[in-house]
Image 1 (cartoon, helix red, strand yellow):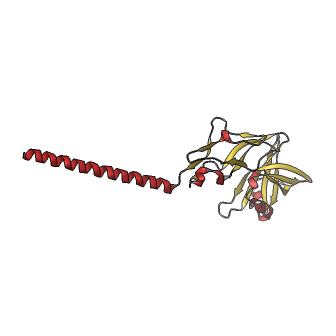
Image 2 (tube, rainbow, N blue to C red; image 1 turned 60 degrees about the vertical axis):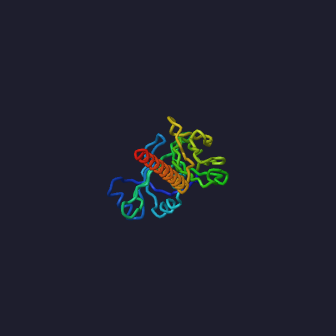
Image 3 (tube, helix red, strand yellow; image 1 turned 90 degrees about the vertical axis):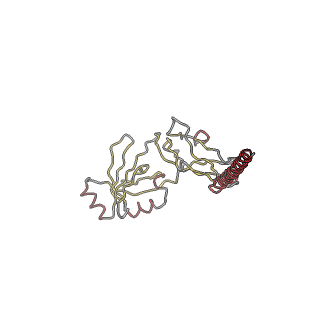
Length: 226
């Protein structure tokens, strides 16, 4: 998991569209903290600070500690609503992380040792089917990324979830099938070359058949003359 982020917040006393619009005019973004078998807590955060953290690129995969009333509430961002025209954040949902609990998260996949893959060395292409894995993790052991080693992989090989060593405290949220994460495929140029070779072979074979047919017709004509 990426390093925890800290986001100062204040409680909201009023809900509703009117109150939310008023907050946005003041440069604040309405938000809510829910989950953890507690009542939802309505809060608002500074828009500039929120945008700064969104721009890190890993906000949705980070634990965010909400500073509220002198205390820190450990959360995980679950949804950020953006304005349809200007993309400014309009509302944020934070999930409260209860001690000892589990949570389902999307964790990015990274591939290691591509230079040790014979298939990639030959010009093969790594076709990534899943760029993220849906995992069920312990609250305090959420991985930042899942590393997959492609050493020894040849063109035509596939990488399934059963081959991946998940970190302690994590398991796949999909348990009913051994799904594919990535495959090594031949480059399009190689496929095209193979296709051209096949076409040339077909043309040669067709020419040979045509010549044989012509010889047969000619032979039949000579027999008729006799």
